[in-house]
Image 1 (cartoon, rainbow, N blue to C red):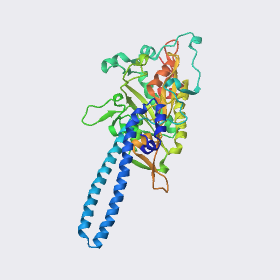
Image 2: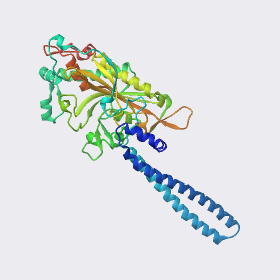
Image 3: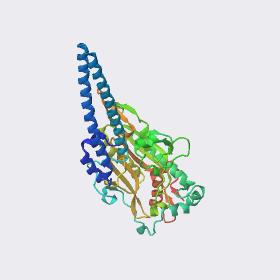
Image 4: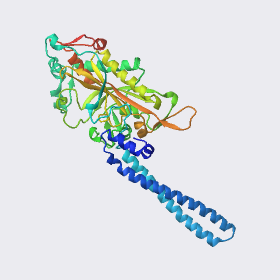
Length: 429
């Protein structure tokens, strides 16, 4: 959530920056009207307080002079002023809550380094790594992961549809083991080499947690809510429970930066049609992901974003999967993000790069919603931490990228060298 004081003091600038995020500035019109009322009320309250203080002094003087009747009249006037002061303060508090309700649906402001544009067409490629295979030179046309996995007997979407419904899958045999190997490989890499602490959070969260990271109230339609007497939701990403571990806490400066990693299944409604994305594992209602989360001091967060992104890139490099890193434009970023890099892995069947990770710096946006603060050494005032998150990586998309990039002409799939110790074989056939 944006800082209400910053919005008040920089209203025109905020409107302009939000417009660059495809957010209709008209949604803030009520904010300005309510703020005008608030300023008037505060001015009137201050005048009432001044009059009340003056009358109190007059009452004291009249009492000393023995003019009790006049003093009682002044006391009555003072009580009337007191009632007006309380009414003004109550309305100011109501207005503050209304400001908060308005801002809960307003996205974060983009960092000055973010490319300005209406949609993904304005995204900027930052770098590429690896060279896609030339399948034509090898004499065969690459298949997509659904055909490869079905042929090998390790992917079954038809039975998953029977058991549950569309956009679910069953992995079996080497396919299931490959998924498990990827999770273990990613967690081992991030904990032993990148300095993250492994966590195993709940796979359900409450409304306060989803509000803290920005999914509620605006994006409830994207979530799976549990039918229960409590308001529990299945996690859309481990970012939610990991970030909220420190909700309503004041951390010590010496404890920052905090770095967490976790594996969880993720559940998303994925409403709407996405064309070929509904085929296979690219856009599922349930998928596995290894998440990276950092809590930092404000001055450290952009260096931390580069580090977190590099940590996610290392996974792709160790698996020798070609990818590119893209800086998202103002019109393509997520609601809570101030700056986002997407990692896009090469998919031979589509002859293009597809997203496999998003790495974002949310600055104080989530921390303000979740009240995650820290105190600097020797200081009494608290500050909001900056929160960062990223996929390290989406496991299902990594799974399918391996099948497509490592497929062989005979239908088998080579196993990336980094995964052989985890999988125990060099070829899936």
